[in-house]
Image (cartoon, rainbow, N blue to C red; front, side, top):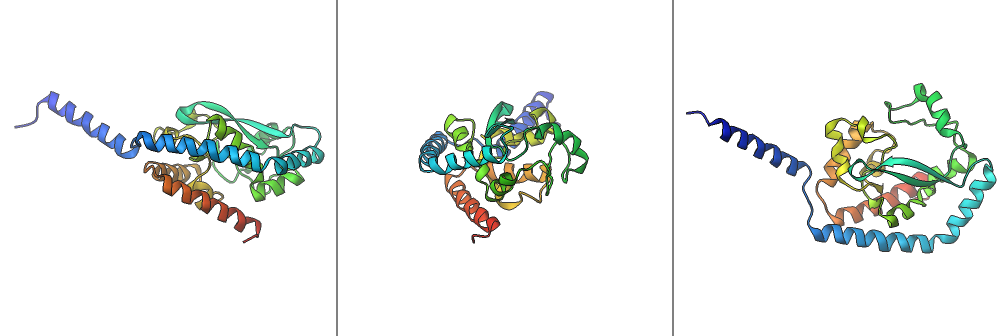
Length: 228
């Protein structure tokens, strides 16, 4: 005998729920408490220790291009699709966002993502800051505020409405300064590959894995700058 309609509906609902939980399992309260505590302590210490170097960088950015602000604020997509202002040292000319549309056809990755190896909008000091990732230092302020975390999916400049349904899985996690994409495929992956990598990594919450990711990021930065 076949299953009754009500039973089939219940079974299907259970299967969908199980699949969703398998894809985006919920970590226990200790994980989220410990992660946020570590974010606050680490970002506060980083801002205190790096205060003078960050001031020097700010002066250099202003001297290199007086036409724009020191910091670049860009609306990014964060936890749950909420938009927030991400902070960076400005590494491009003041009208970079306007020029982006003109350079759209030259992008090395599919739109709405955007990347150019030799982006003509980048300033002289901006090239150095990007190569060393020093332009990301102001994001410790984002972490302290709670908009970001130290390790999480990298926030996109384009809104959640442009995502495919399955890609929204990355929005279940607070965006990070670093993550698997920065370490394993920053300049080689398209957005779909990046989503698969990030969702796969963060659907298994582990503070130990995230701590290892921080040290891996440091190694990658040193390797990219030629220090190691």
